[in-house]
Image (cartoon, rainbow, N blue to C red; front, top):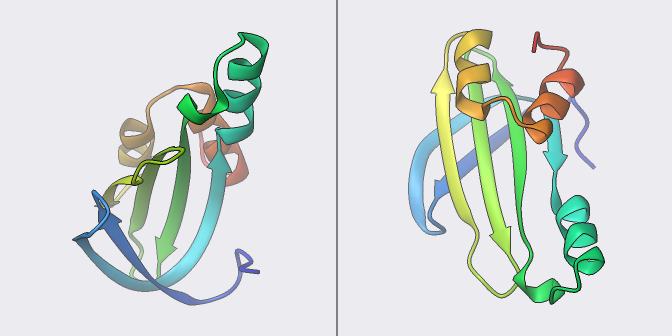
Length: 114
């Protein structure tokens, strides 16, 4: 299991197989997933669970002082879609993730301003 204090090398990808171009040494600041909430909403509304779509958000800090932001959109039976950016400031991180409930959870876990 990766903890926030471990050093690691990470490769981010976009659209499944195309390299995002970020290989770095750093640490995971926060990870949140909307899977369980999306699944619960589908079940409550009588929808097929296989149609559930969710986001997972990851925030890393590099040893060089940048933030690596990653959004992974998943859907059962489909290839995950990856988006990512290397950013310089907390304000840029907030702009990348937006102000939805999942983004707010990520910022709280990472102890960043929201």
